[in-house]
Amino acid sequence: GFNAGSALKADGLAIHAFATTAISAASGMLSWMMMDILMAEKPTLVGCVTGLVVGLVAITPGAGFVPVWASLIIGFVGSPICYFMISKVKQKFDYDDALDAFGCHGIGGFWGGLATGLFTQTSINSVAKWNGLFFGDTHLFIVQVISILVTIVVAVVGTLICIGLVRLFTPLRVEKRDEQVGLDLSEHNETAYPSFNGLD
Image (cartoon, rainbow, N blue to C red; front, top):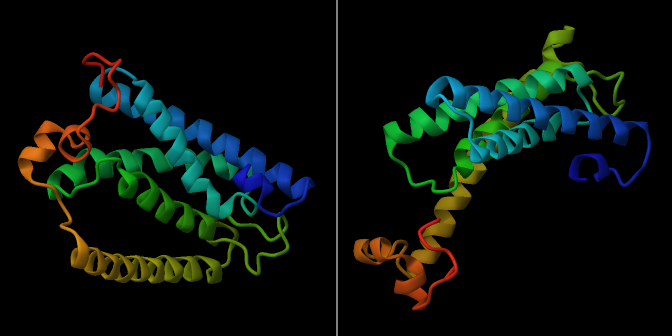
């Protein structure tokens, strides 16, 4: 709905965006499942869903610009990149990302932006000024790299400003004991899911 409906039209380009989105999501799910099997010797439902989301994130910049066959590559390559970020890089640097937003959405988005610069074809969407790198033009790839770098700077500066403002009113983290007890009890004095008995 997001990719196919973003132009507010029901035309051939919307169908193309829908197809690339669905294929990238499916191939992202498949490759994450394969990574689970290779690394942990069994697929997991959470892994499958995570791979599906990575496929969606990665195809979003280029859904209406890349060939359908390229969407399979974009999703399939995106999942191992994000899997590595979550399983190795996050553990190495021990940064706090409980929902793996940076590992999936950040890195998946970076890959999707680069892939748009690799696979875009002006014949698919006339809005594109240049073809991608794999079709003989370097302009779009360079623009995509620059846009990703600018996005990183804006995100870092914006986040630091938000952190500075929040610190004026409240601590950024709860105490270690409150974290161990659980924020449902320590912050709200209630249990959010009383029907669950050890399943969470």
